[in-house]
Amino acid sequence: MNDLAGKHIVLGLTGGIACYKAAELCRALVKEGATVQVVMTEAAAQFITPVTMQALSNRPVYGSQWDAREPNNMAHINLSRDADAILIAPCSADFLSKLLHGGADDLLSLMCLARPIDTVPLLVAPAMNREMWAHPATQRNLAQLRADGTTILGVGNGDQACGETGDGRMLEPQELLEDVIAFFQPKLLAGQQVLVTAGPTFEAIDPVRGITNHSSGKMGFAVARAAQEAGAQVTLVAGPVSLPTPRGVRRIDVQSATDMLAACVDAAPTATIFVACAAVADWRPAQASEQKIKKDGSGQTPTLTFLENPDILATLAQSPRARDGSLFCVGFAAESHDLLAHATDKRIRKSVPLLVGNIGPATFGKDDNALLLIDAHGTLELPHNTKLTLGRQLIAEIAKRLP
Ligand code: CTP
Image (cartoon, rainbow, N blue to C red; front, side, top):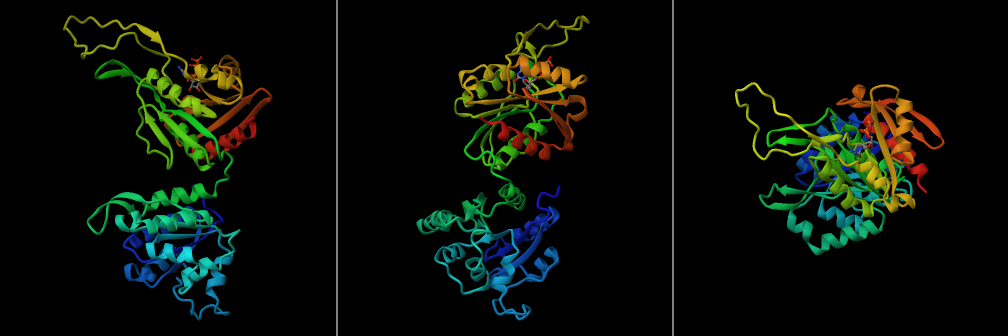
């Protein structure tokens, strides 16, 4: 992926043990296509060398406002003018307070103060001991920085270098990378509440066996991530899959179609968009055995009878909020053939304004797909691409169709 292609990021490091993670972050940003200019405070250079950061960013590192390499001797101006963002990671408690007060006694703080505030956004990834993080002074500084337009990327929870446990660790490089990528996505769904189903369902036969299908959940997880990146609050109801939860998404794990329906009915009253990506099992065993069904040696096979599962999409699409336009419902159709005909028919049968067709066997488990969008006005092909890119394109199409 090259989600940061064309982006120029100034990566600022301040003093803290989390500087060791900044090396990995720098590498991840570069791998994602960004150019990275590193600026370090004197304290940061106590934790990691400028040589390491220069090698990873492939650019000389700046640390002093008196750096004679700049012809006009104004590194604090020159470095920020072509930046798409300044990211301070790690950002110490001291540096937060400096930013808040407009302090400018070293290159990094001077550059932050001198940046064009409307065109060069400032993102900070705090890192500190849990007591420092919880201190009213730090929390007050964070609130004011937010009010001043700074994006605070949050902190992790867990073991700290000092031996204590709690909030205040810097987020992991991969988490920061996801947050930076999300930051640059257009906020097409700001204020929306999106409910997504994903993955297969598992219909128990007995405590050790069940019926399921090949859905990997990747498309639904990509849609959930894309919706979150677009500024929505996202609830993801996931069948049994082993995928990581996208950053900032509330995930509810379920097993059966009945559980999935209950979770969706629960979340639906506040949702404004519902995207049904899950490959819900059409049938379930009428009665799951409480004990494992044993072979009795007679050669006779057990007889299973089935009940039809509730249709989650149809249930939500028929709710009063869907009918009056407050809940925009999107269905998926996984077909093996005649995609257009089946998907067109399914859109009408499920009474949804938008239906997304794909060829199931061609995409199950893969990282890419191709989609065919069908609404009342016609069709739109989203050609072969990664599921994340298609998820973003689908979110943009949904945003266009909202009432
Ligand atoms: N769906 C659902 N609940 C079900 C079955 C399907 O919410 N019990 C949703 C899926 O998440 C998808 C859409 O309905 O958005 C279409 O699912 P699909 O299984 O492809 O269609 P079916 O309704 O099962 O129709 P058919 O068996 O004819 O393919």
